[in-house]
Image (tube, rainbow, N blue to C red; front, side):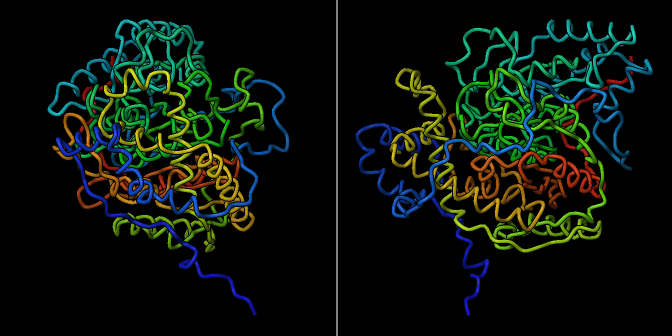
Length: 570
């Protein structure tokens, strides 16, 4: 009689213990890796990262170069959810301290207790104040004050005339430096890209602007999005509002910091391997990576094509839903978006979870620090009290999928950066140079093999979703790590910590499934802890339900760095 393998025997992700490099040692290492010495370094480095083991495995699946999910009834034309179908008020008002929400701004504008001009003036002062502190917040890399005030005056006029474009009219929204937004350049966190302002908004930005949002400026990011700490040697490293000596996470680092510091209730990010969800987790806010193609990616910097997602970060679940409603939906300029069904928000605020079965792969769920596991298990118990059932599942081949994601994202990045590499790679931070130099050793065979692994991972997830409605994990393996002084000014290499940070996030970038990060608690030092929920294709609504259920249970804490001033008073 055959028996199924135990979850412990199926689980194959490992923690690693690799040396920490910084300063002169890291500079020498980078020179060797980029020069003739690479032939001596590469064999061991490729083995440590798991590529040699992957090359020795056989995956018979047909390669999948994009995680295109079938839609039973694709939308027939370009459309987002009409503002009439958006939430019209916050789903609940928590007791105790809370962030200002987009609903608060809309209510204040409607009641005349403030207006977008007063808000914009207070916001610009708050950005300057937080950047004047030591250390500076550095959430934004560029804010054009007159452009912000021009938008604010137009929004104030609409509210005065009783014709706001939506609930988002005049609500401050920040945009990651990976997305094109007029009249700013797109630097991608570098010093050599973005020499001229862009001529068109990214589709996601245009949709937010079309809803009347006050587009504040470009937020900081980990250089070219190839890291998850948020370190940036060129524009300054953003600080975690909950503990300024700790990282924000990346690569949407400035967007998370701007929301967590109370500067904006919503910010736009981009997620190639956790770059929305990780900083959201570290900064105690909400982050969504939607289904592949759900929010059009076009007119952002074409960097990591098949694992890239535009997604919002927000102060609350309700704010996240508003941003999603404004941006999600097909657009004829984005071929990927044309495969999707019409977005819906039906029952997104239903926190009776008795119709849901939550899948947990226990060895994966518990492969995190004790404080992270404890907070996540406590929230899982709360979901059960709300009626949800918990079912154990297994997801094989996670180690192969981890390596396949690294091969995929860095190969695509290297190809996109090829026109600039020879002339400019020495201008990048040292950690970025290490990652690019190492991944330039990957072959076309490695890339195809990685796409076979992608197909297998999708199969494993789809098999799990035959049994459960959602898969739950922690969002990260640890809380936001401290920023080592040795990382300045040029960066460091800490692959052991990066492995812990990325324990859970990259897999849905490869598979195309939607995933959300939401706070579930704090550690004794006050650093946020978050959970991740992974959903079926196109089922962002169920993820919102879980995030809202968790939010109702969580007592939010104010960050140490918080925007001063009352933006709701003229």
